[in-house]
Amino acid sequence: MGSQLAALVGAHLSDRRRSVLAWGLPLGLMSAFIVAIFPSVQGALSQAIEKYPSGLKEAFGIGELSNVEQYLHAEMLSLIVPLAAGYLAVRAVASGLSGAAESGRLDVLLSSPLSRGRLCAAGFLATAIELAAVLAVDALLTGLGSVLSGADLAAGPTLAGFASVWPLALLFAGLGIVACGFSLRTSVVTGSVAGVLVAMYVIDLIGKLDPGLSGVRYVSVFKYYGNAIEDGIDPLAFCGVTAAAVVLAAIGSWLFDGRDISA
Image (cartoon, rainbow, N blue to C red):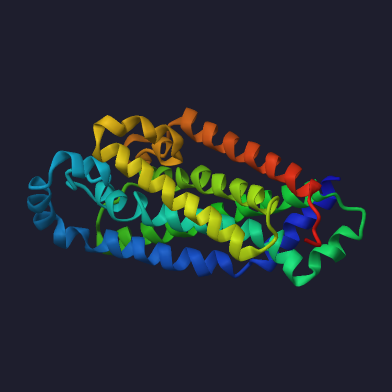
């Protein structure tokens, strides 16, 4: 069982070997650029941020921008990287399920002594590894940008900031498997889960902007995402979101196991 699962994970990663650089390089270079320009814009930013309403700064994760870590979070880690990683996660997990069904590979795979549950588990594990690799590339390039520009970005907080994206994105891999339990069309799976991703961000934003609606934030995973580059990783939130992702993947596997793959 273990060797079969490892082979499936390896095959999934091999099929998507280009995605680590295709996603990691653009995000990493963008983050490196943000870090590199900070020393030249720091003074102007601090003056501009002073005029922003406090509620607006809190809603968009904007601190005083007095250091490069706050600037990296405001420009990249508060929105762009989480949304990109979440979309990557659902695309990755769907490629091994709905994508395989559309191409006819799924029929071939399931003609062997292979359970659908194991196939779902392999897709989920491979996506977790792929996400970790992409985020590692992002962090590495960001650190390189800091070294070259002299921005003095702290290594520990930077790693924490990018690592905190991993469970959030993995949750949408779990949702992707759930979606595959209802549809084997990749466009439907990715579109529906991407819609949930954006909706959760908007719900969290509304809750931040309007204190009277702050309770709605509890239904959004972004409520538990936080600001790890400044505050460190919250172990409870990190483990809780990861556990929720695993539960969703298990539910999706059960749904996928019971559906007609010819439909």
